[in-house]
Image (cartoon, rainbow, N blue to C red; front, top):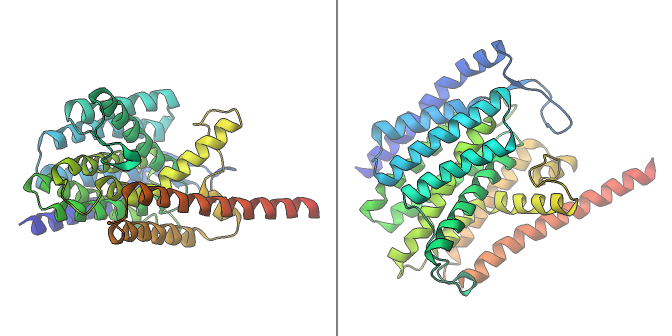
Length: 353
C-alpha cells in the first residue's frame, strides 16, 4: 500500500507540474515576467522565472490528495504556502533580502516551534550528543534557514538546483522507508510529492531551459529538503541501535550546496560586503568560466552527489565525525583546486593582454 501511494503521489505531482508549465511559460511571456540576461546570468535569452508555480502546484495538490497529513506535515504545508507567496512576489516585482529572510524565519518557526521538528543532538558528531532545549530550537532554525538559502543560491544553472533536490528527496524517501516505522510513512509521501513535481519541472529546465524555477521554486525546494533533513536527524534517537548515523545520511545529498554557500559567504565577508550580495563566485560560475558546459556541470555535480550518498551508506561503520569531516574536506579540496586553476588562467590571460 505504501508503494502504491508513493507511486501515485509521484505521478500526480509529476503530471501536474508537467502540464502546468507550458501555460505558465505562455503567460510569463505575455506579461513580460522574464529573467533578463546580465553579467551575472549564464543564459542568453529572456526566460520565464515562474517554474516554482508548477512545482508548488504539483507538490501541494499531490500531498493534499494522497499524502498522510499528521501535525508536522500540516505545519509544513502552512509554512510552504508562506514561502511560496514571498518567492512568487520576488519573482514578479522583487522583494528586499530582509523581507525574504523574515518570511523564511516565520516559515522555519512554524515547523520548529509548532510542528516540533528539530535537531535534539549531534549523536556523537564532534563528541556532542544531546543539545540543551534552547540550543536545539535555535540551531534547527539556523539549519533550516541555511539549507533553504543554499538551494536559493545554487540555483544559477539550468537543472542544477532541481537535480540536487530530486536526488535528495529520492534518497530521503529510501531512508524513511528503510527505518520501517509506520510513523515515517507521511514523510515518504512528502519526498515523492517533491521529486515528482521537480522532475516535471526539469523536463523544461534541464537543457536549454524554457523556464527557471525562480525564487519561488528554489525556496520551496530548499525549505522542504531542509524539513526532511532535520526530520531524518531527529530519528537517530528512536533508532539508536541502527548502523547508520542519521546526521550523516541527512547531510550526504546536500553537502555541495551547503559547502558552496559557506565558501561564498566567507569570500564576501573577507571582502567586507554583505554575505547576501550577489556575485559570480559560486562553484558553477567557476566551472563555467573554465569552459565546462552547463549540462556537464549538472552531470558532474549529480554524480558527485550520488558518490556522497554511496559513501555515507557504504562507510557507515566509520566514526560519524570522521565521515562528515571527510565529506566537507573532499568538497573543500575540489573547490580549492577549481579556484586555483581559475586564478591561474585568469592571471595568464591578464599577462597576455
